[in-house]
Length: 313
Image 1: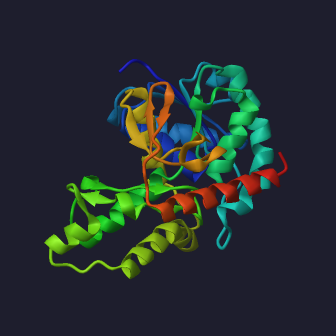
Image 2: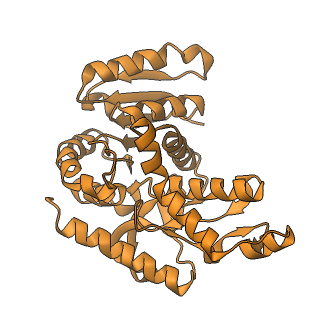
């Protein structure tokens, strides 16, 4: 793989753990960490760089925006963190102000980069980044429900005692309280969940589906209530997205991108199955999901649009 430069804006729990995940996955030859708290960024870079002998060669530094010049991918994790009992949408206005200072600097030094937004609320901040950057929509997207989808598969794998990578399932819509589990498309080895459960002699009810859906939605809140933040799983999700981009895998991921009529949603950033590769977003897949799931997706998109319309952009 050719040399790749990745910059991470934000040296908090998610940003620093992301740098660690990128190192371990051998995804970058150069990693630049930028944070308003320069000592924090320097400390994280020093800690990471002192472990370079255990991984493939990689140059990890703390720097200013000028040091991010000509990045292939810029990952934005900066912003105000979510607090216990606070929704992701509660963060909107505080983080919009942060992004107004961040995005122009990124664009100035890396005009050809792909911008991957991770900060919450990720759907709205991805759209804010798109508007502030002036980049084409295919080069600006959010981590979306990639992690939620992983949580969904993990919970199902525990129930059915099977490798989660063999489960085909998606969480779509807002990365947040209005997200939707696409049970109509969830399969294991080509079988619907109900068929697979029946083959094992297991009863799988609508009540169980509802509980799993709610558990996926509440997973981050539970972790935040217990340890104050999330960082490991999201960093692995980011590393996976970066790998898909840099290796041009053309994988289908539930990243948050600009919908333009798909699923009856237009002009809103939200998550649906999307082909991702070296150019960023290749195409959005308009899958024939169940009518109730489609309506729920449209309602989720409406919530995001209303929130953005009332934000302080």
